[in-house]
Image (cartoon, rainbow, N blue to C red; front, side):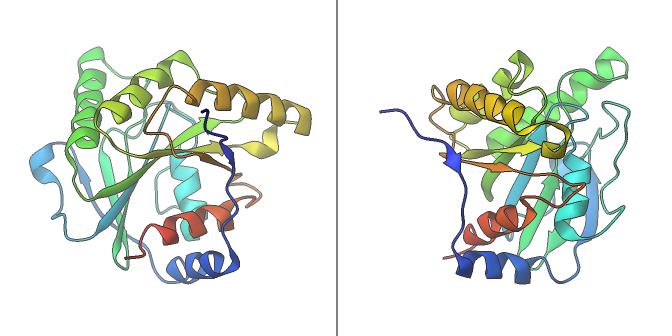
Length: 216
């Protein structure tokens, strides 16, 4: 039976928990370039993965209400570390963008390897949020990460970014394409979140989804 991949709709209690979770300060902890530099796994953890320039840093800034917390750039591949941020009992993790990057090939290979090792081995990771540009949908370059998450048994949920950049009919076409692409992936969580860091659309929903992961 195929998963429906409907749009996430947290109940009012989860939305309020999400609002409270992100109402306080979120701060940068450290940037990590090797697995031995990871902070202690002493709290729940979520991560954000996606193609270079999909808008991970912008989404984290909008989600936390901290402009400039995560470095955003129009240059693909700027994030070359695993960047950790802390909010109460939660780590938010900004992963290196995968796919095209304006960097030497050996540098790209090194940080892509770090990303894959992290995803496969971080036991405190509750969920990976895979960001997909609403203008483009799931591309072949995304398939490797989705397959890695399947093989590592890491639950992942797709978050569509830049939803303000497309017309409603184009958004619906992207949603159909994403739903079809996710059906073969057993680790895919069966709800989608549609967001815009620029307008704030969907951020309350995403906060509610994250807050629900912290429930005992």
